Every structure is written in structure tokens, then in C-alpha cells.
Image (cartoon, rainbow, N blue to C red; front, side, top):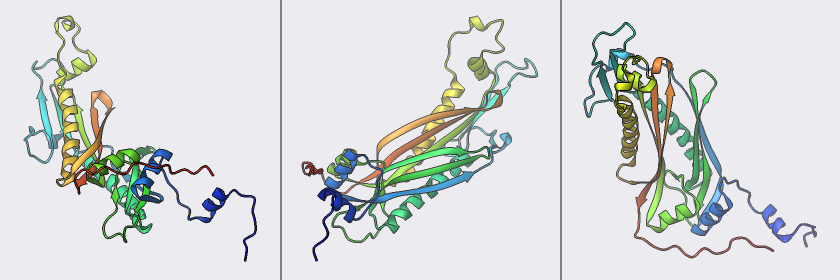
Length: 297
């Protein structure tokens, strides 16, 4: 039986009669993935909302000096002046907020796991172009984690026999990694958090209070306690990412720092590190020259 003629162009009919899919990729990334043999299956995502108390461990549990290799960073700073006034900060402290870091990691891992489960249900071999976001919800100390990406299937490959891979990369950036002989394994994200309770010298340097009679005689100097807190938060995030690699390489790393000031100068320093865990599976091999993928007729 001859199909009834329609007024639709041939290309439009072909699109409407083929299997539909969704994608979060740009046109360029989409074309590059097709050239690599990665067929998009659909947009997948994972959510998690974590709630934790706004107050961390008590101050008294962190008075011990920091010992390399210990469970968490802690460092005490002592006032060099002796008694000045009842408001004088005679000591200060930096300490690693392990409770915050563990909660953050649990939230991210759960959202990532749910995204991967969606990809498995769709029969995908991996997820490319992953985008992650964390944002507070209301005033209840709740942080929402959201990961999304485009699930892809390797053309000509058999059924999936392992956990799908995930990567922030897509398009030409992913193609160059594969061309160099590396395969994506998973996204890596780590969080470092250090709280700073300033002692008198740090307070003076940050706010200029209490130096009315001799402030002009003090030369510029490094804010040592602040530098140590920020450095340690970055170190914690870097080492957490290193442990997550299990001997693989980290590619395309980005580091983002933020801070949150509490009352009376108490500051939280946060570091978020993202990257792509990749594993060598072959020597360098140039990919075929890309061919046009868009037909104009």
C-alpha cells in the first residue's frame, strides 16, 4: 500500500518517524560525539537534598595542636600581648569541618549515583557533558545537589557489563582525551572546609581595631592565620580528589574558593575541586577527520 503523500519535507518526515531522544549537548559537542561513535540516548539527572545543623563540633574538641596525619586539621594561635581587656582575643583557632565535608560528599555521591542509575536503565554506556550544581533551599540548612548529563551508547558495542562512565567533558575536549589514549571513568568532585576563629593579631589585620595609638607604626605583614586556613582548605580538597582516583589520572581540573563570614569575624573557607578521572587504555591514535553531519536537503 502506497503511503499517503504529505506536505512535510523529507528531512522532517525522517525526524518524526525516527526514535526521539533528548540531549543537553551543544550542536558542536553533539556532532563531535556522533563522529566518535557515541550515540545520545537521553538526558539523565540525579538529585539529593542534604540537611545538617548549622553548628559544627564544639570549640573545646579542637584545642589540640594539629598533628600531620591526624583525622582532621586543627591549629591554635596564641595572643602575644598578655591581658589587654576583657574583649581582647587571647587565642584563635583554625579547624577542619569534617562533619561538613562528609555531608557534602554524601550528598554529591547520592546525586551522582542516581544519575548513573538513570543511565543504566536507559541502556547507556556512559554520561557525557555532566553539569553539577549545589544551592541552598530555604532557611533550614538544606543544600540541594543536582547532576545532569547526556547518556550515550557506544555504537556497535554490546550490552553494558559495568557501571556507566561519567565525565564533565564532551565534544572535541572528550575526543582529544580519547585520541591521547585515555578513557573517561567518572567525574570527581571534592570539598574542603576550614573555619577560622581569629585571635587578636588576625582581628587587627582584618579590621584595624584596637590599634588606635600605634597602628601607623606597624608595617604591612602577611595575615598568617587566614593564609593557613585558605591553604589548608585547598589542600584538603586536593587530597580528597587524589584518594578518589585510585591510581588513575585527573584531567580538566577546576578549583573554586568561597567563604562565609559569621558573627564576630568567624569565617568559613570552602574549596570545591572538580575534574575528570581518566584511565589509559591504549597508545596515542589519531581519530578520523570529522565529516559533515548536517544535510541541507
